[in-house]
Image (tube, rainbow, N blue to C red; front, side, top):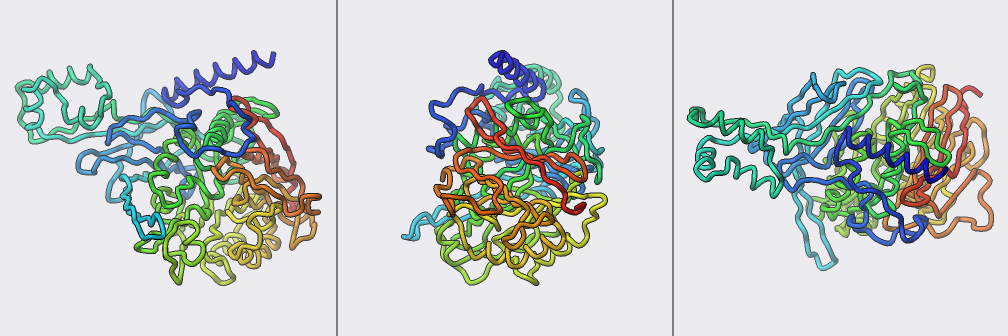
Length: 562
């Protein structure tokens, strides 16, 4: 019976994938030779094939597609993608709507307004040898005026402008689109389109240029679901809102298993202990690609995770592996700020981060000051009955700092009648049962400044990563149990190359404030907003390639109503 259920699950996955996007689940899961509990052994994306989607070698085809909520998640969504094609050679638009066969909305991706590109210089050793990297053209396009709690289908279109002189040369050579052939590599071209354009162009070469929509370069068909209105506790299926939470992902084989199981979670598939409720949002509390200034690893990471985050909004907070100080300019968080587009309070203000942290994580020379305010550094958004504040423990959090004042203002202004649930996400764990990452300066500063605010304003849950284990605390304030205090959760077992944390702070017995802890299970968590008084937390482990397993379930009561 168990085997029959799994077979049916695989069939459902394949049917769903082929309907929405033919390349989404091309790689069928296979069994791991060793348990997924084992520490990550490899850091090569060639070994992370379970979620990888096929992508063209064309320089103009959109790639690394990912989503983020807009300022108002119930009415806006940001679609991000990259391309190697220069803006003067191609233009892009996004078509979207309720019907996958007919789009009634379209927006032009304006290079002046929606595009960014960045440079990064990496010092690869202490002999001052450098590697220079220039990113692709990265677009962040907002879709606005959307309806709340609705599924939208979308596709990124490519239009290429070419001169008729080039087309004359093409006709004489017997191939209509050598320009396209060169950009597409060996991809097959749509013959119907070729025949149509050949017929139209014979004897009618009168204009200077022609803009041709190139269907073989357009993206696959994707979809997303907008957030419910503030205060609404159910999704469009009538189920409670569910949010996936993960950290310290990386791009190993185990990372791909976590991503794959999150993908299943977004579709509401039943597996061991799961209730079939769809996750409609994902939060990552830092340490995404583990590029560590090797910028090509951001490209491989986005290629790996794109099948998940092209359908599930992916809201991020920076971790230490996002610092990546530039060896020449000393600017920090350059890739992180350019590759993501979170709902910004205002434009980012960045400096460099120096000293021991820069030397350890970027092999770059230290500098005397650092700053990363606004932009993707910290922000907040409303999702149904929850207000979620994303923070940056690697920028100043001390009392009176810009970030401190932002957090304070957010906490003071939350309407707990509309959004009774209040979550904070950060990378550094204030409460940490593991031996690793104890007494780090930025964590101690954040705890001193922000824990009193979390207690005073009754923050419900504080999510963190950094330590590569899983922990959920009891309600705790300043080291003592208190039913009206926050719960602290560490979700640092996403699957990264560094493997699991080896030791607990106290191996014999957990601290009084620890509810449960683990340092052997890769996976992620979900929080389900049941009503204004209770949420359901689950830890979902990667039991093996094909199977996820709910290993821990915990109900959290809203201390506001105690």
